[in-house]
Image (cartoon, rainbow, N blue to C red; front, side, top):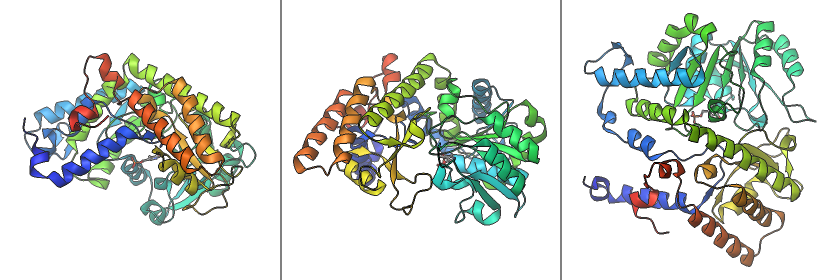
Length: 436
Ligand SMILES: *Cc1c(COP(=O)(O)O)cnc(C)c1O
């Protein structure tokens, strides 16, 4: 096959090449990041981009859909099997779109939502006031307990009784502890609200049986597919038996034509591949390693004098409070970026800094675990973070850390340990002829 992009558009090709090199050369600790398999990439970049499709399998608005119908049905069946769901919708373009579709299904403009505060771990799409959700609905927020920095379910119940929301959202982008979805459902039932479980971050852990599933409890379950689930940048909606009968058709039409247009069939194919991978024993092993890496990194950082929000982690991410180190989240993000360690500054519960500064950073292990980093590398990364953040690093220190980052990245040149097991040596280097 012709290397079409390189010849037809050298500018775009050059930027892709540089981005590939950047991915190769940096230690990715952004908690929502991951690396897909070659198979997922192939499906994403496939000829399915050429197919126009609207509606659902067997109920399309264009002809020529026999193969894409089969594909979407395959993805739906796999999703139902993997998550023990009765209903799955694979069409949402992203996790945010999946949430919008649920809102459109059960809410009218002005109706009340109770979700997790953005500064306490919630997500923008749960009703931040400058978003579409925040402008259309009347959004209220629960916070974590100021002492334990964990969800206080009695407090959430009291607030729900006060606010009387029509929808409660359980789920977070930066909450390092388990979420009790059963308890959330009890709260929702007490106040007559629907429960939406947004599992964008922990979906892969749930698929591997390492975090309790909300499917038996929540009326609706939404997720992104590119985070711990290691699929394409896309979304999904699931329902258990108890709500599928009532809401299947309603969710279908809320997704299309409610909030979206024609189907991204290439993403559906990639999600089908992702779901097959997620059913494998090697995916479960990956998630166990992810949790183990996260534990080790958290313990090491605590031993080096860092304070972790809530004192540790139960999942793939942790929040570092940098006030004891005397630096802001922004400064920490910049210092680590200078040695090619990528993290994001993050508001901490009851943070006194602005969202553009923040008192902490969020650190996650999903991407580096995919890359094959294990316990030994976690100890080294904890050292590197400590070296960069505990004191103002000198030029010498920075050079030393840079050398070590580059050595770690060479040690795990890519990404694709799952495919190596299948004898498939595809790497970013082979696609873009990277320098090692
Ligand atoms: C990432 C995330 C989403 C959706 O993000 P998209 O970028 O739209 O896929 C939704 N909810 C939570 C809790 C998230 O962390």
